[in-house]
Structures are given as structure tokens and as C-alpha cells.
Image 1 (cartoon, rainbow, N blue to C red):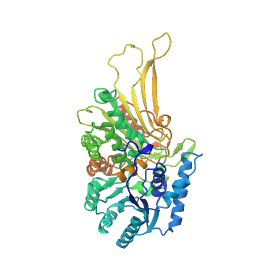
Image 2 (image 1 turned 120 degrees about the vertical axis):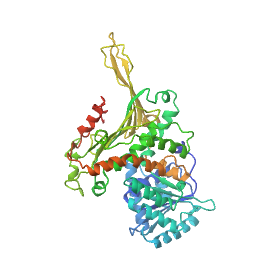
Image 3 (image 1 turned 135 degrees about the vertical axis):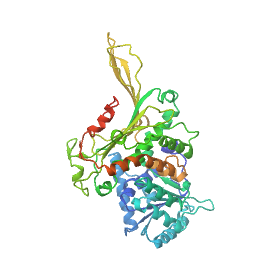
Image 4 (image 1 turned 180 degrees about the vertical axis):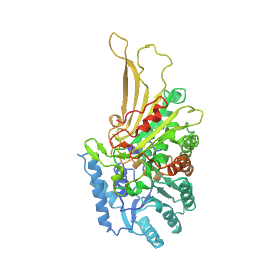
Length: 507
């Protein structure tokens, strides 16, 4: 990985980025603000251009104006006193072009091909193309096929062609396998970048460095010293305007085989032989392969689902999921999932990994919490030992904390809890980021470390497929079963209580 990106390291080489869905929400909110941040960090080359491709019949100038306004809103949201860097935005806007086209029309791709040839000549992009699929997932495969038919996927004479595929990558194991087969019939695996924006978070990237670059932690990162691990991805928002999408997806499909399993893989993987993309991804794949498969008898005890009812997030009332737009009034789709996972390998045998993710919980928090085992005998027989936790906070307050016991000052021998806290903002300063900057830059330089291979995707779906199948034939009968603004359903607490453990509070 390029470790000097954030401080203005070497620039990417010349290329043109084609954004399918160029007038869409993802482009406005995340992709173009990320490119603006890269421009401000001087990481984009002089030979750079953006071509937006969309069905919307936008005027090119109006399209650029809308994007400029969205970037300005992003800058203000990050820092109320900040202002858009007009020089950097002008530099970027001067390299932006728009093609009105239909994803299903081969003629539109010929029009795109002609525009790219024109941009190559005027902006010096050297024929290197980065295609970003910021479109609805049902168009992923067909768009790649059209790119191939138009001759835009061919790498020859030193030029490269790369495709970024957003999530969701399939809706189950069969569809993920089918999509991989369809895309790989056009592209080589080295041309495909299956993106997961969680991996753009600095704390997630730092997890490998934290583990493998510090001699004090790696020797205790195993079943001998760790009691269990908790991975939490909690959101306060509901389904917003995505009711139709969520009704066919649910929390398990939406979060676990991608975001949560990526965090699991980085936490549990062995040290790779190098930081090359294939070395890192191969070690993560081994973790997913080693997860103990759940059978029908295990699933009710090891996989919990929930759906939020009316409640409040702080002082703001929140509707029940079944009251959201485009949601069935008797929906049995889960908005919360918790699972107990066992990794059957030498390092982690006997160490449970508890994962949970849900909407309308009491706080927005993504964290990996490692609970260490207690000492075998306490010198202070009447004292309650302070639990030892190492907590990696992914969002919103990125950092790492270590909790341990220490003597409380005074004449008596009493034990108290101490927390040592490292915050990225305190040490390195706040830096406006969408989480996509690192990922887009990595595609430009050809570094696939933070992206998923076909086997990573299919391995993750294979692990959750038994749960999906069980839930499909055993619909939930107790929904809704947690109040908006709470920690989640009581059945999730009971899952840990059966093991003599409790969840860390989501705060």
C-alpha cells in the first residue's frame, strides 16, 4: 500500500476516470469529493480527466456546477470555517466531460469511446481508463460486457484498463458466483477492483501495521491470551429512502459478507509474506475459509435477527421499520443481525468472534474490541478484576484504546480501571475524507490490496448462505423486537449470556 498518500506522496500516472452513473447520488456525495481531496493533496497527475456517463440529459456545464456545489457542501460539513479551494476545483472542473448515454445501448458505448479518444488527445491521459460502476447492481455485469464489446477493456501497448465494482456484489452465493463468471469472461482478475469503502478508513488500514509492526502485541494475539472478540457496526439511521432496496436485502446481506467479514479477516489473519495485494488477500481468504459452518441446529443459537420498532434517537422520534416508505406493513426483513463465529485454525481455536450490526441503534459506532483473558489467580481475593480490552475504533472517532487495571491511589489496595487512548485527530490532525480517497488512488496506481478477489467474495457468501436459507424457510415471528434507540434485541444479549459474556456498550 502507498503509505505516503496522505502527506502528498508520488502522483498517480496519467489516466481518464469514467464514472457510470455520473449524475447519481454516489458520484455527488463521495466519488467527486474524493477526487477533489486527491487534487488538493497533489496526487492527481496533470494528464487526468473525468468523463461522467449517465442517462440524464444534463448540460455539461450544469453537471459540473452541481458537482461543485456538492463538493462545497462537503468541505463545509467537514469544517464550517473552511472554503472550497477555487484553484483546485477549477483544475478539476477543466478536466471534466459528460456523455449522455444508455447503459443498455451499444451505440452509447461507441459515443463514449469517441469521447475518450478525444480526451486522450486533449488532456494527455495516455489511453489508461478507470471505469467506475456507480450504478445499480443489476447493471454491473451487463455494463462490463458492453465495455468489452466496445473494445474498451483491452490492455495493449502498455495501457491499462481497470473496473471498480461497487457493492452489493451479489445477493447470495449463487448470484455472486454468476456475477464473477460474467465479469471474468470480459476482464482479467487483475483488472477488477471490488470496492468496500470500510477498507478506506485509516484505522482499518492501520490494523495490520498495529498487529505486525509492534512486538508487544503480536505475541499475545492468539487463543492463549484472548478470551473473545467483538466486532460492532452500529448505525443510528434507519433505511432512509432505501426501503425498496432493503426489503430485498436486509442487514445480513447488506453488511456481513462484505464490511463485517473484511474487519474479521484483518483482525484474525496471519502475517502475510509481504504487503503485496495477493499476499494480504490470500491470508484474509484463509480466515473466511476456516469459519466453522453453521447447521440448522446451530443457527437459532448462533445467529440472531432483529427489526426496529418505534422509538427515539436522542430526542428525535423514530418510526418503526414497518412504517418506513416502501416497506411492507408485515415485513419480516431483519434490520439487525448478531452472530457467534468460530474460526477453526491453530491461532483462534476456542476463541469466539461475536459480530453485530444494526440500524436505529443508540449510537453510531464501528469498533473491533478484543477482550483478553483474566489472570489465573488474583492477589486481591475480594477485588473485581478490571477487564483488559483493546478497542480499535473505526468510526466516527478513529483511534485505539487499551483498558487495564491499576491501583487506586490511597492506603488501601484497591483496583481501578485505566484507559490509554490514542486518537488519530490528536496525533495527525483532522483531514477531510470520504473514505474513498485511498481506494480510488490505489486503483490508479494498480494496488489491489484493499479490494476483494473473486474467492474472497464467494467465500464470504458461502459462510452466510446457510443462515439465509434457514431464515428464508423460518420467517421471524416476533418482529419488531427492539426499540429504535436501544442496543438491539434481547436475544442478542442472551446469545452472549449463554457463554458467560456480555456485549460492550455501544457508546
